[in-house]
Amino acid sequence: MSRRSAFTLIELLVVIAVIAILMAVLLPALNRAKEQGQRAACLNSLKQLQLAWILYADDNDDKLVSSEAGGAYEKQFGPAWVGRTWGDYHTEGGERMPEEDQRLAIKAGALYPYAEEIDLYKCPSGFRGELLTYGMMISSNGRSIDGSPQFKRRLKMAQAARKLIFVDEGLASADAYATKYLTPAWWDQPSTRHGDGTNFSYADGHSEYHKWGALETIHKGRDSVHRHPGIWAPSTEDGLADLHWVQCGIWGKLGYTSTKSP
Image 1 (cartoon, rainbow, N blue to C red):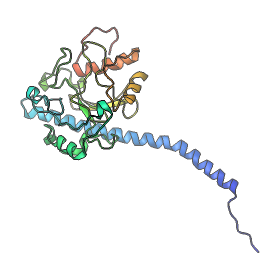
Image 2: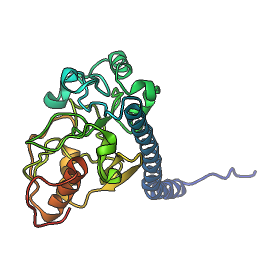
Image 3: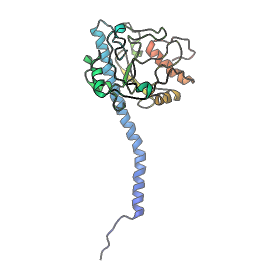
Image 4: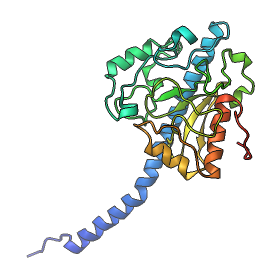
């Protein structure tokens, strides 16, 4: 009588081991490819919002839309680019606003008529339940920080290709994005997204990815996501260079003397 052939236990273990090795090799590459795709989609959304920012100024006698999200400062600066979409979790680690309320807040924003797709306001790799992951720099018709320069008109912004307007924070945060002006310190946390940096848009209409140079910047951005870190000053030269780059991108210059070029 003929005998039935079958895999032995040793052969099965060898096959499983080979599959495990292949998975260990391929998964990081697949994750990187996925992240690259999400970064590209995020850059496109930021560019669309940036174009909406430009169109708003064109339709309003060159006046910039207010970066102060939520509407608390409309009497002072005019219509906010977006309504309040955040709960209290950004400082307390707690609640999120219901998604329907977030949609209504986005639609109530002054930029919505120029960017009427809700998905444009969220990075694909943002947190679940967050419909807004982008913030606007406070220097775009927002409050002054320590006497910082404020921009009210688009055409009066010098070196528009270097002026930061939107940033991918990865979640909705209160009001606008800022650093200190007169001192080398962060106000909002550095954002670490899509690797070791994050996406920004610029006043001239383009968007691009910026990679941080310091480990302390990267770690601070990853560790301070759902909780505001408070005022924070870098302790390394590379960390200061990261901060200087953002401060110059927001304000156009440093408000203090620095021995290190941004």
